[in-house]
Structure formats: structure tokens, C-alpha cells
Image 1 (cartoon, one colour):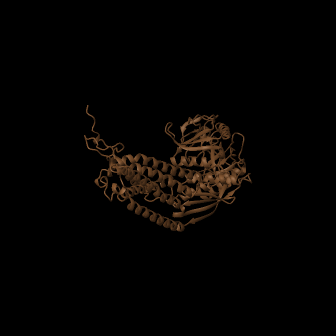
Image 2 (spheres, one colour; image 1 turned 120 degrees about the vertical axis):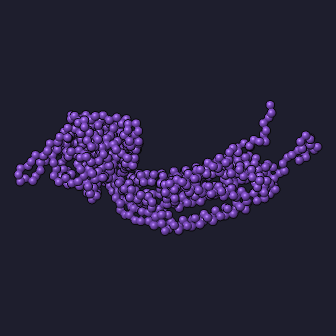
Image 3 (cartoon, one colour; image 1 turned 90 degrees about the vertical axis):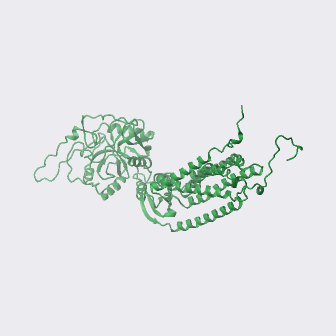
Length: 591
């Protein structure tokens, strides 16, 4: 059997370099196309480069807690605010304490400042209150009597319900029999609500209306006449009315009933004392429920004490008729959700469902997760920040980076000659990947490019150039040993690869530790440094190495042209060991 011809087999490790280069080219085209598709052609800039808004929040003591303003609670509040508005910590929204009772928030231009202001400003204690009665948000001219309060939802808003984590809804235990025909809210209405008695006419000349019956809360509480008067006069259809109601409700003690508006102003409520505090919620998240067909839902997990409180209140509400079988989730004095309860919920977890969109479910989950602050805050000052100083610093930083890059290029050309083209092409690929990814990360995760991040990108030039130099020197060492270029490229790669991976791992580890333990602008530097380090590995493995494999087949490089940077004579290469075929050497030491 004839032995295979080894001369026709490509050296190990060469593979198909053309395919690898096409792959990274497709990736670059896809990233650039994504920029044009989403309409984001430049990275988002941080507040030091683009300007933005800065406002100061002043802490206020909670009712019944005169000594709540302390260092621990201030740090807790600042941490919760930062998680709410800053996500991964790279959007350059800065939240930091100042003094003993103030928090400074800096929002860069390009961020939804109004939404961030609402998220940070909406910082009162979160609470779950049972609904005593509800009506349309407009001012009630004359309260008309009806059993169980003002007649439920009045066709406003969406119907939300709270169930156990399994999502199975049970019928409420009630003395009334629900009517089988659903209303516009999508739920069954009891006969007592459907056939509420009309108000009796008052005697002639009397303007005093009949006093409506008082709905119970948990079967044992009643609404005071003063609270009824506030409820009738409350007008949630106007922004001023909602603001006034929210301020008054936020200042009410948790143990007192209160009147409140829904955030959209369509509903107004009389609510009982706080049954479950926001601090009792351990986690909340939006989930798409494809199995039961409920669409987007919000899953809640409570602490051990919170689970017991939630079980007790849902057990009481499940025995009531609408709207007393609902509880209101109140944040900063406004009702963000009012799900109904159909059965007692045990186990420390629950699901809220009912017509959520993805955005509304995520907003509610965010409020439930990060809304329970130990303090309430008010915006004390708001200013606009210009980018003049940052622009000058950026110009100086880019100038320094350009000078450094020019020096690197001059050194590569002078020392490596033709190999400098490989290094420059690799730097170009790395620049395209870095720019496009940072641009797309802006709308994706809120990444904003600040001055420290620019410094991280400039430092990455040196890290990337160092990887090329390590590989080039390994190739030149193999040529000095007397090997030709093609085997030198393949033999030098394993040792260069190990060195490059170890070096990049150390850089990435430093960036990761810096990202975890730091806050503010330093996170931007650490994130950029880590990103460019990963891209350095990608470029060297998927561009530099395949390109060198292909160039080793070209005569200019393979024959060691003086301007290729791989001239054996200039490198001081040893002559290869040779002997004539079929003849024994006449001298044992003859080369």
C-alpha cells in the first residue's frame, strides 16, 4: 500500500483561512447594517460629553418615623435609585449621596430624562392597601347611594387579578352568586352590584342627598364622613388634582385610611390601612405567560413575614364583593395597580395578570422591586449641565490618542515593514467592531460613552498592538531557526496563542474586578476595557492568524523580500540542514 504524499497536505492548523475571514467580514457587515437599520450611527454620549440634567433630591422623614434620615437609609435609597435608572451601570446616570440628607442625580442627554425623573422622584414607601370603594376619577357632584360603595370599576381601566404562582383562578367565596354574563371589564359582576338600588327622592325643597351606605373593609371597618367628603370632592381627571391627592396620600400614616387616584386619573379610591409594606416584597418581575394565555404577567415573591401578611389580607378580601375584593398597590400616594382577589394566596408568591403590555408589566415589576424606599424625597433643585468642559477634554484626549497611534504606526512600519500592513488591517477591524458594538449597546442596554470610556478605548490600542507583536516575534523566531515562512506561521501560533490568551485574561480580569467594585464613571472605563479585550481575542484568532496563513503563500512574504519584515538574512537566520539524496556525508560535522 502506497504511503500518502505528505508534500500535498497542508500543515496542521492552517484549515480554511478564507472561510474565517469571510465569517468576520459578514459579522462586520451585519453590525454596520444594524446601525443603519435602527438609525443609531453614533454612540450615546455621557453627561460629561453631551451635557444633560442634574437635580437634587431632599430626603423627608416618613410619618411616624422621625429619625429615619440616617446614613444607612440614605445609602440604601441611593442604591435602589441607581438600579432603577442605571441598569447595568453603563448608562452614565449617576446617583450619589451629598451630605446627610440629599441625593444628586445626573442624567445625560439622550436618556429619557422625564421617565428617569419619574422613576427617581417616585420614591415614597410602597404599600398594599385594601380597596374600600372606587369610582370614576372625575369629581362626584352628589354621592348617590349604592350597595358596596360607588359601583365598582364603572367601565374604566383594565381588570387585573391576583392569583397564586400556579396561575389558577378560583371563584371568590361570596354570599352572592355571580352573574354569568361578563361586563366590559371582562369579569363577572354580582347581582347586588348589577341591580344596585336607586336613591330615594328627598323631600321637596331639601337639597341634602341621601347618605350612602358605608362599605366595609375586611368586614369590620367603615369610612368616616370626613373621608367620604374628601372622596366626593376628589378630582383625579386633572393633573393638579392627582398631584394634590398624591402629596396628601404620601403624607398619611400607614395605619390610616386614605383617598387616592390611579396614575392615569381614570379612577379614584378610598383605601384602607396598609396591609403589606413594600419592604415585604423580595422580588418582582415581568414574565410572558404563554401556557395559560394571560400574556404578560407580573410575578411577586414576598419575604417570610410578607407572605404571612399577604395571605391574611387576601383571605379577607376573597370573601368580599367587588370592589372590596381588590387591593391597591400604592406608590408615592398613587395607585399603580388594583388587582382583585379570588381566593386566599399562600406560599409567599403571587401572580398579577390582566391586559398588561410588555412595557406596563416591566414598569410594574420595576416599581415593586425597587419602589420600597426607607425614605421619601422631593426634587429640591434642577439644573442643565453643558458639555463645554467635557468637549475640550475629549478633544485633548483624542489628540493624545491620535499622536500615540501615529507613533505606533511609525514604529510598526520601521521595524516590521510589510507585516505592519497586517497590524494596521487588524487595528482597523478592531476599530470597526468596537465602534459598531458601542453604538448598538446604547439603545440596547443604555451604554453611554464618557471620557473614562474613551481612555479605555485608547488603552485598548496598546493591548491589541501587543498581541500582534507577540505573534510576529514568534514567527520571526521560527525563521531564525532556519524554517521557511509557512511552517513558521503554524509553529509560532500555538506559543503566541498561549501568551496572548494569558495576557488578555489578566486584562479582562482587572476590568471585571474594576467594574464590580467601582461606581460612576469608572464603570465606563472598566466596561470599555473589558469589551476591547474580548474583541482583541476575536480579531487575533479570526482575522490576524488567517490573514498571516494566506500571506505566507504569497511570494513577497514567502521568499523573504527585504520589505516584507521576514527577510531571513536581516533576521540572522541559520542555514537549513541539508544533504544530498543517496549519498552518505563524507564528514559527520559537515553542514
